Image (cartoon, rainbow, N blue to C red; front, side, top):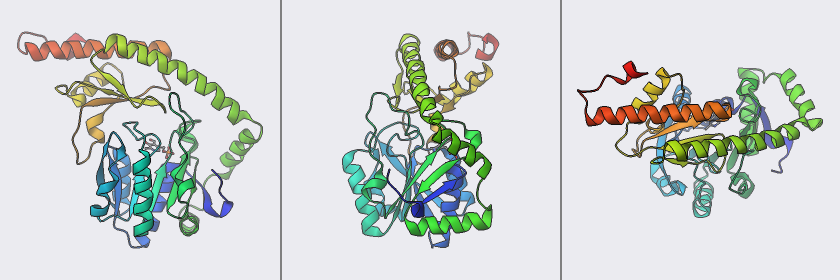
Length: 317
Ligand SMILES: Cc1ncc(COP(=O)(O)O)c(C=O)c1O
């Protein structure tokens, strides 16, 4: 995405960038920010801690329901248009246009979180929203998915006024981020190491993802994997009568960490599901985890059929 150093800031990752942007928005008179529903609950907590009230806006199969922004009272929105987090839908071309129109008409800010732009499988990469309207879109990228979250490096490409404001706040707040790590990353980029790393991880993830899909179709035939055209996580959609939070608890007891989709929902209800980050697993680990999940679902289903006659699930694990 073409940009100049005037409208680019290196950040300590997406969360750092959003925390600083929240402070800048509050200083500019904002008291609310629109967020997708469902979305990462930690982000909502972070906005609240920085004095902005998050206003959840529903996401459907075309992405964020942009028509609801007008009535939201917000003049800024955080959106994941390329691969909605966690549902994985892409913002439709009509909604992309409507979002930009909303921002231009109302002098609003669109914050585009492109957290996993580097990994696309069955879907072509879409251009960033920022390229359509650089005066109203702030674009966020991160090394957390491609390299490691512990690096705490990301970038913000934003309208010049916002970059100046973010630079100013970072200068006062934390004196900027760790330049030694940044120098190491620059070297990695300059010597072609990062490109090689992306090429090899893309192949590795493609294979892992195929293994995962195979396991889901074999062991969880009544569940649908969602949003797996891109990125490093999947939502496993469960039948309506199943409780994702109960399943998550039992999986944790078996040593498998996944999140319940209901924990990502704020005001709007929807189908139950499991949010599963799969990129760090080994292929056999993924297959075993999916089999364990299938086994637990089977026990829970038989407990639902004859609650009194069966031993508790915990006794069976
Ligand atoms: C929606 C979303 N965007 C971005 C990130 C990456 O954040 P960071 O760059 O601060 O590690 C995450 C990680 O959890 C996320 O859930």
